[in-house]
Structures are given as structure tokens and as C-alpha cells.
Image 1: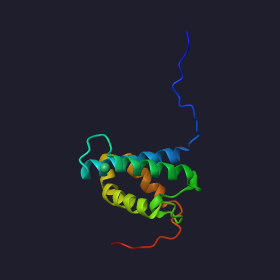
Image 2 (image 1 turned 90 degrees about the horizontal axis):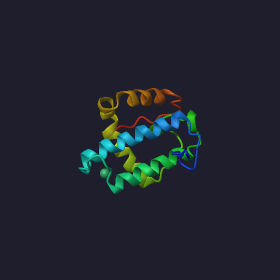
Image 3 (image 1 turned 180 degrees about the vertical axis):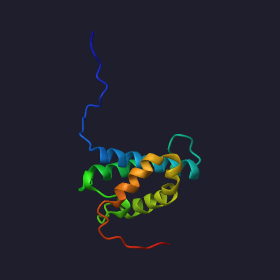
Length: 124
Ligand SMILES: [Zn+2]
């Protein structure tokens, strides 16, 4: 009998903080896509690309587990175009996270209190 290993070939040691951040952005993109692009369960291509991009940025985030939430980060690592998209997603899904994913939303709020550094208070 041969045991079949189910883990992916590339075993990355991902910090729980980054994992959670990915789950949060994933949930946010899903809420946004479901309500804007009438996708059911599956993300549309555009949102899928955005999510992949966001995850890739998290992998490359220089702060890793010490990072604050991306919205408060001083290093603007997103391309301007992706940044605009993700801002729209967060603005829409942020408040809705409390309803759909209260635990994730709470963690995200707590993470946001870490190292607020400098926040430009600009509301549109
Ligand atoms: Zn979409």
C-alpha cells in the first residue's frame, strides 16, 4: 500500500497572519463579485485576477506577520490600477464583512490597530 500525499509540492511556511489576510481579501472579493458581477460562488475572471494579484502581493509583503492591514500600509506596493480596484472592493465589502464573516472582520479590525503609523484622513 502506498500512501498518497495530498500536500502541494511546494510547501511554504506561511505565517498565520498572512494566511488570514488572504482569507479576508478572498472573502471580500467574493462579496464584491457576487453583488457586482452576478457571479454565483465562482469569481468572474476580473475578480479572480485581482484576488491572485492581492495574494501575490501578500507573499511579497516585506512586513509579513508584522504588517498592518493593507489599507493602512505606507508601502503602496499595488500597481495603481489594481490599487483602485482593490480599494473599491474593500470599500464595498469592508462593512459587509461584519455580517458575513464576523470573526475575520474582527481580526482584521484588530490587525488594523497595529502600528497605525501615519494615516492620511481622507474621506471621499
Ligand atoms: Zn467579479
